[in-house]
Image (cartoon, rainbow, N blue to C red):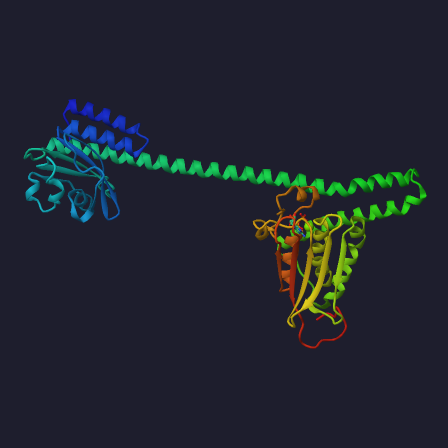
Length: 421
Ligand SMILES: Nc1ncnc2c1ncn2[C@@H]1O[C@H](COP(=O)(O)OP(=O)(O)O)[C@@H](O)[C@H]1O
Ligand SMILES: [Mg+2]
């Protein structure tokens, strides 16, 4: 342990106190350079940082400019030597010591120097003191520099801890912000879901009341029952969609493996929408060839694919519009195409439509309701049947075409449709 005269001791203590208040590297290097000059009476001081194989002259305090801002290979300069060898260097004549990159010092006032590593066990920095005359650093000067280096090591450690702490706080803050956003999104979706669930229940309740209280003209009974039936179906569909999503996400979703004639699925699914299409004055044209389109899969689920696509086409096609549904084949694949001349889709939305909860950001979509699950479910179902689904649209207001391709059974099979395989 180095001994220091009493006056110097007070000075050192005040430097240590100043260092302990430093919060940034810049503050530390400034305090150190200033204190090192005062404690040694040197004409200049530099603070050097280790950067891998290089050293960086980060700060200086001197009678004339020294090396601030410059970098040297650690193997080629005195500060590097000090850090690599973990020991001080005392150089009385810089022109005679091979460790000194003399070209760098020629333009400066430096004739002699002393260099001390910071954190001797594994140096990450060094403090250099320089004199404009030939001077051999005294034991007292070296002791002072050493004590300053020890205090600096602590200050650097403090800064590391502070920055670790700050990073941890930032991470914690970021996690909290994300959790709050996720929570808000969940709340938003819960309110959308409850709204969508309530929507079909309101007319059911209204018409049932009229029927129960016998306040309805008997000629209207059939209409009432149809409205109730339609809304019950919509409600059931919604609940089933949510259950499907939950099963699909938890990997508990299975499809049957039977031989299915796609023509039946298409005819059934389109049939379910006939009434709505008529009410909405949208014409639906179905084009099917005579021969069967055999695919392997689950007929209910293939029906659901067609149902969802036609449901969307109807939902996004205004009165007077037209929907064309066709089933064709290229010999290996069945190609189902559902095209409409409705509201269309803008090019930037096209790649996102199959995401869960995704709806085009237009007022028509919002007023049309829905949860943005239909196409995601279609994609999951199509993929479960080893097929593909694509969408194209010439743009907003110009209609859309959804195309599903499923592999056809090409080998001869029993004629019985839906035979388990
Ligand atoms: N035929 C279509 N024409 C225009 N946009 C469509 C069509 N089908 C789907 N979309 C767009 O894709 C979005 C997602 O559809 P979907 O997943 O079925 O959810 P939802 O019908 O509940 O909105 C719709 O909100 C709409 O913006
Ligand atoms: Mg939909």
